[in-house]
Amino acid sequence: MKYLFKNKVAIVTGSSSGIGLATARLLAEKGAKVVLAARNKEKLDEIVKELKENGTNVFAVKTDVSSEQDCKNLIEETVNHYKAIDILINNAGISMRALFKDVDLGVIRTLMEVNFFGTVYCTKYALPYLMEAKGSVIGVSSVAGFHGMPGRIGYSASKHAMHGFMNSLRIENLKTGLHVMLVIPGFTASNVRKSALVADGSVQCESPRKEGKMMMPEEVAKAILKGIRRKKKKVLLTFLGKGSAIMQKWYPSYLDWLFYYHLAKEPDSPFE
Image 1: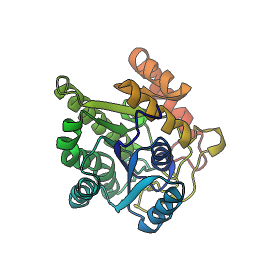
Image 2: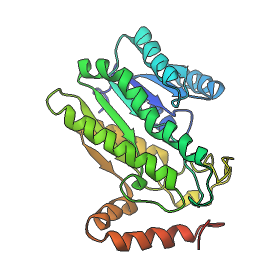
Image 3: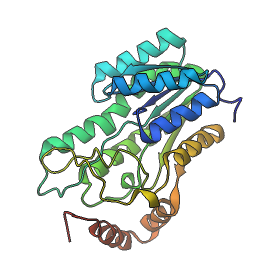
């Protein structure tokens, strides 16, 4: 795996923390030329400094993936700097925690703009370079992308949309050599839940779940690189994720209740 990624140009969105940061670090460690993209420029600059001190080839582009122009600029900056794109990891995302009856519709719009359109914009502008390189485009999703998740209705809808987009893109490119992959972690210890939006659009700040029992971002990063190496269509992680996929196919009604009761146990759950 070490030599597979050497000198490959990889863009990682949402790379200022969590899965994105862990993936960017691992790619840099494997010798890739890494482009970090996120909204927090100060944080990105700190990460770039840290990685360069370790002798890696990285640079950062401040990017809000909900902005089409920002996504176009990210791709242009990458090509100007490295002259190619081999890997695009669409990881930037935001979550929510509220019932549909209570939520401001602007919250759902925000999640669609970040989680779905962010993936669409970045992929659209990177596609010619990825196709030329016969490279890989990855979407980091969630079990909420293949089965509805109560209390996360906007998140689930945006991830369902991502799945439809990525699966269609994969089929369109069956003969082009482009590798398209969905990565579906279970609950992962990251800032996504802490930055989740509540009903009025404000930030949740504190995660309602115990981080210690979750998958670590570094584990997801390793699975992403392994999936790229094997050119997998889908990487489904954790017992919860794999079990949910099986139940969604054979026992979807039971999975409805399982999700309901599992999430109802959270502290300050929006439903009983």
